Length: 629
Ligand code: G6P
Image (cartoon, rainbow, N blue to C red; front, top):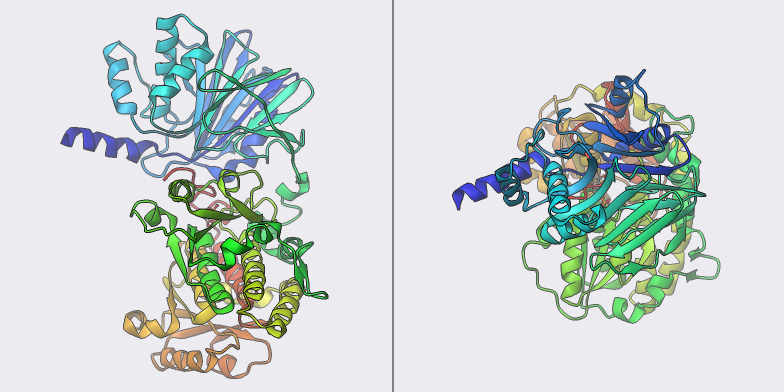
């Protein structure tokens, strides 16, 4: 028993992966298409990458630890001719990434190659069986086990590769998106998914496969989102979808609403900077067609169609991870104030495991940029089984969480490539604010006057963000001044408390500086012990109903020689008079001010990371889309 447990822990420690996958079959040269796709997906994983091609019925696999460009350099001068290709960019949570653990993996016969995003939980048992049959493994991965398992079934049953895959998938436990090719069939990619995303782009005499639409958009806007427990047999002129019971499924073709420019840097040095600067537009896009302050209307069909469930909810549970969780925390303040509905904000990873109490009449709001975060997805699946009504606030259209939700509203921020979330966060805040206003007004807990005032305030946010972004040199100066600090403290009260948490998270992610976010008043119960002349303390201290209190908190820090960096409202001279440095934001109603006060937090972390020479778009150890638990 102990041995088994250890083995499972060992498996988890070496091969929990969340990766980007790309595939192509058609008339073009596959290598450039797959390589470009891998570069577009590199934000999903960047510790190793690899590619498999077939030329003259001969499989060629090239893989390398490091970024995609390192794999690209390693194949310079090689014959890469092929009209079919699969590629992979890997992100490992533990264990040393290496050439041999990189995908694609090749089966023992040398005939099959496979890439995989996910985890096969029961691979140890299967590996044991295969070892006893004489199979040899050249990596530590579960992927290689699954591949040889498929090969073994095919050898023993004498059937097709597709059939062998189907049998294998019925025996495995875990999550996967896999692409499989065989040198005997150099036109066909067989793909399957459960729990990890897969999109297939439909071209003329060609097909593109990827973890998300970004590698596909350049070639076609017609895509099919493959569902869990489906297998796709993909040839240049043919796309067949089947379920695991071998029954054909009708592919549902969706039109992508996305432009190529949206996934390119557009003249900015980094995606993160570009995405910060896009916020006036992305927030505007999120409000467009929904918020009509002139006639007092908020149109959100997902909310309208379920208004009874929402406004009569006994309780709202918000489930999310990371930055999305911070958006949820802010929504707790807004919904409780404007709608008078009790709200609980849950980390999805905790919620899913602790057997939470869900009453009939509870509403769950799921917040996720990617719509694929495994912890959030699984938490929602189990809540849905218990009868909960799920409202999804998701950025990626057609993603798993979007499809699982009973209703929802997209945040319309466009593709977010920088690993640290910026524009998706403000998009989430905009959606949540509209929801709170709409529900509060319908419920009668929000007066018409305040409703109209807040609508107008929300409408003005994109313009204010635009103003703020015109000149960011002061924030860059502050970042350079404090870049060598070892720790940072971020403090805020009320609506700005979640922004303090978000500021600390951003700084950790991008600059690797230890940072903690705290409610400003709670500081005296612990963190104040850290304060000395070396500790920068960021106060998110805009003019709101907590203002007087936070002025006292600033004084408490100054009295202990801490360095204060303030986020203050334009025109305020009290906080700036006490602070060592100040980042100003335009005035806004306190309910919506976080949409502005988060911008300096994003820029501060960006510029600190930049000043330290770090890869701000791909911070070490982080992944954009965490598709495993
Ligand atoms: C990862 C990302 C974060 C993100 C979190 C939740 O940790 O690096 O930026 O906030 O996942 O992701 P989601 O896609 O569900 O919002």
